[in-house]
Image (cartoon, rainbow, N blue to C red; front, side):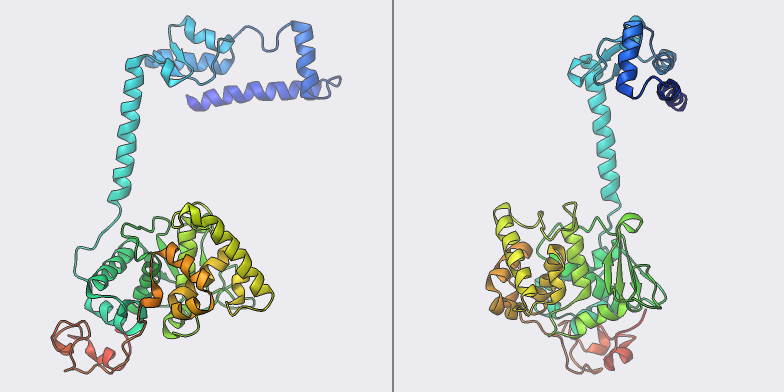
Length: 399
């Protein structure tokens, strides 16, 4: 019925357009209406439109007595409803009180059901944190090792939660446990102090073996992209280079971490745009100082007087992600070289990174060594139980 109504409406609109086109003396729509009013003393006439008649008939068949049509007025298309005892309101406040209450209740029920369904889709960890994942964190993630025991538990929960709600898919490569843990860690590190944070704008990370190009090709020329936050038909997805992912956690001194870089873009995007101004994280009084400082630092990059990665000079969005890498990888150096920038990033992420001791466990873990998870048990009887051989050699278990 709705489809037929729109067809009727379309016929009326096309009729006007065709009439203008067929009349050689009418040059434009303005002249058409002036001519029509001059000849007929009306613009539309006194009879209701075909679509209004169709809709009226439909409402009568369905027993509808109260309707809301914003801006309906009292013209020819309104009269047909009034004549058939259908109450027409231009606003909610004009409606019959009982009808108004019913509409509000229905809208509330629909909204509640939508929110409940959306939240019910979010999974939280119910099983203990996998022991082999903990070993990966200890060996590979310096941020994790800088945390207190309580903070480590919280970090593990967030890593686990992220992986329950975001797929990691390998494209021409095999996804290993270390890949999953490093991706999740990259997501958690920037929002670690935001207790209720949920990445609602991502549901899958595509892991490519190495660099790719704008067409997502993994072979051929122009392959220079290490990571990307999807838009358009790729909305809700992120692409990462497996090689760059592991390099970001292996090299502790280069001030770069591709995965953290992309997740900061994702955080930046939560306010609607990737523009380098994280409105949801940055208090309003610091927004202008932040923008001014970004512009100043970008100018320094262009002038060749800054050791910040030149890619940060691309635009504000890239600058924000680049200096966030710097903040989480080399916080003490950032505080020394760019104290004002460091202080503002502290406010953005609510973390005093310069006070953390960032290091990874590098000592050899043997069968009878104390388990690095601080359980008090031997490694072979705890996290190394069943698969310690691979970890003893310094490699992470594959699953």
